[in-house]
Length: 127
Picture: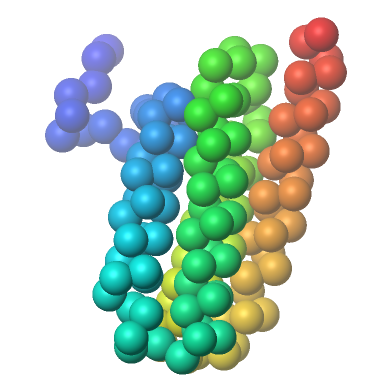
């Protein structure tokens, strides 16, 4: 059964599509930070936001590459989840000042690391 646009979900998106969407959002958020937040946030909070954008783009680029590799089935969801948790908590922390989010951010980092390790393992198996 083919899904229509209105019924599509994250699970129906290809890895490449997830990467492209994550990259587009990363560019938009980076521009937002550079033009809309620079005068409003303290430098350390702006740096947190920019770190979130940078790691979101790393994950997006990885997903774009992994989307061209059919053997990559495990890593993409770890990378996507890691980017959402890592970058998302940094965005919220920067915008709200909620410092307790700093305790959640490393979970996203661990998911990103695990995603990259699994990508390497899966690439090695297919070689």
